[in-house]
Every structure is written in C-alpha cells, then in structure tokens.
Length: 265
Image 1: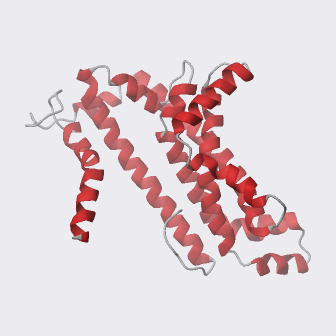
Image 2 (image 1 turned 60 degrees about the vertical axis):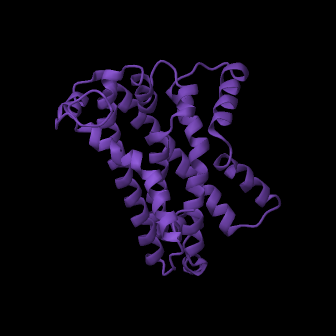
Image 3 (image 1 turned 45 degrees about the vertical axis):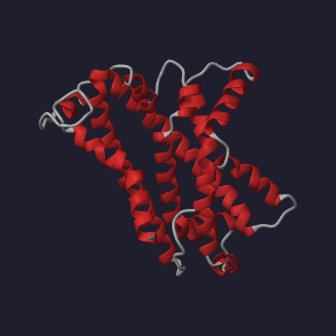
C-alpha cells in the first residue's frame, strides 16, 4: 500500500513536467492529445526571439548577483552560528531563516511597500536582486552550516599554533575545505533566483526577468508550444545544476571525513 501511495504521489507531482517535452516536440499549437506530429520549430524559434534573449540576460544577471551576495552573507552567518556563542544567536538566526517559511506573496508585497513608499526607489532589476538575496540567503546558510559542522576545528587551531593569522588560516585552510559547500550553495541560490516568479513580478521594472516574460506569453495561445520548449530546457538545466550542487555537497562531506545524512536541508 505504501509503495502504491509513493508511486501515485510521484506521478501526480512529476506528470506535468514529463508532458513538457511531449508538447514541445509536437507540431500542433493546441496543447492536447492526439499529437499532430514531430517538429523542432518551437526550439528554433527560441533562438530568434530578441525579447526572450533580453529576459534571459536579465535573469542571468539577477541570479548571478543575488547568488554571490547570498553566499557571502550565508558564509558569515554559518561561520558565526557554528563557531561562536553570543547572546541572542538563536533568535537572530531564526529571523534570518524566516523567509523559508513565509509565503512569497507576503514577502513580495512587503518589499514593494518598503521599496516604493518608504525609500522612494524606482523598481528595477536591482530591487529584484535585493529581494532574491533575502530569500536565497537562508538556503545558503543551511548548506554552509553543514560544511562548517563537518570541518574539524582542530585543523584551524593547529594552523594558528604554527604561526598563521586567523585571516590566512581561513583563506588557506578553511576556505578550501568548505569550497564544495560554497559551490553547492552558489548553484542552489542561482537556481532559486532563476526560477523565482512572484517576487520578480512585483518588484521588476521595465526590464522583465525570464519567469515574468514566460507569464506574459501565456496570453497568446499560439505561443504556448514555445513556452513548452523553453520549459523543457529550463527543467533540464535546473536538474543539471541541482545534480552538480548535490555532488559538490557529498564530495565536500567525504573530503572532510564526515558522514552523509541526507540532502541539503
């Protein structure tokens, strides 16, 4: 009975994703069975769409900037959480991790009010970057916490006893050992930012990101197969990035002699 439940759950969860390539290679413009025939025209159209390329460039810029900033902040927070004790540490970490459980629509609405009404800033890609840093940093902290916990503190203590400064110890000893975790955090944060829609929809200005551009295409039924083709590519890229991130995470744990206890969170 349990196997049947698991199979039914996975089928319900992944069946829509599995249908993406089916209709992406279908020559008809109607998303329905029976299929009309095989074609690569929808993928070819992706290469000639200038607006799509612009939206993709915006998303890559936002994802790249927000992932780097999120990992830098996550690195500092994870280091402080694992290595130091100070009053209010649990409360501070809880506030930082709060975006993990808050609905994105609440976060997006609150940020929109703060950015426009309180600070008086105009909406742009940089407001989206700031918002994506807010929602991506908890994921970076979760991954880097595990990296720091698996790192033996005696290695850093030995380096300091042998004459290294704290800065050089971090650069020469700590950083190389936790580098797989850093790479994994970068890849996860990059994927989260690249796929995020709700916050980008609220905070983007005239320069739209890729998810917002895809949403705008839904108004035109004839372009739905193009969305299917684009979605197929995005799913493959996301799976590849997540696979690389998980491989880096496990490699880092094995490198430090730790035991793998599960996934990222």
